[in-house]
Length: 157
View 1 (cartoon, rainbow, N blue to C red):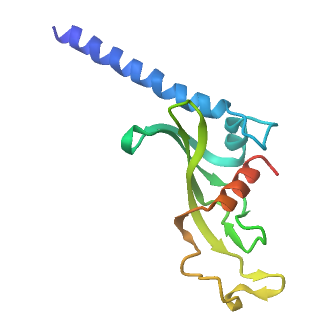
View 2: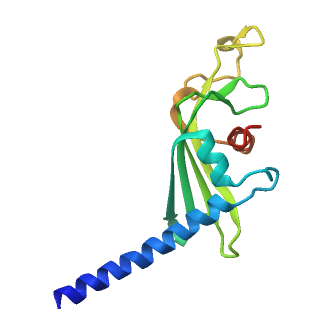
View 3: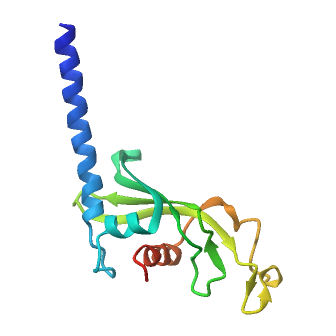
C-alpha cells in the first residue's frame, strides 16, 4: 500500500512538473512584436546574469511565468537616460498567459537609481527627481516606457 501511494505521489509530481515547464518553454520560445530577431528566452538568458524562469499561478488563477535575473550593465529606463537600473540589480518580469493562450508582460519591477550628472547638470538640482524614491536599491514597479527600454536592453537594442 505504501509503495502504491509513493508511486501515485511521484506520478502526480511528474504531471505537475511537466505542466510547469510547458509555460516556461512557451514564454522562452515567444517572439515578441517589435523584437522579431530572437526569442524571449535567448535574449533574456544572454542579457541577464543568473536568469531564473518560474511557472506561477497568482490570484484568481492567473497563470504567469516569472523571470528574474541581474542586469549586466546600467540600463536607462527613461528616454533622457537620467533614471537607470544599476548594473548588477535584480529585475523581475512577469509574463501573463491569458485564457486565449496569449502572452503579455503583466508586471515588471527593479531598483531604479538616478545618474549623478545629466547633460552636465548635477541631478540633485533637478526639482522633479526624488532621490529617495529612486535610490537604486529599492525595487519599484516599472512603467510602460521603462519596460520597453528594459526589453530593448535584453534584445541588445
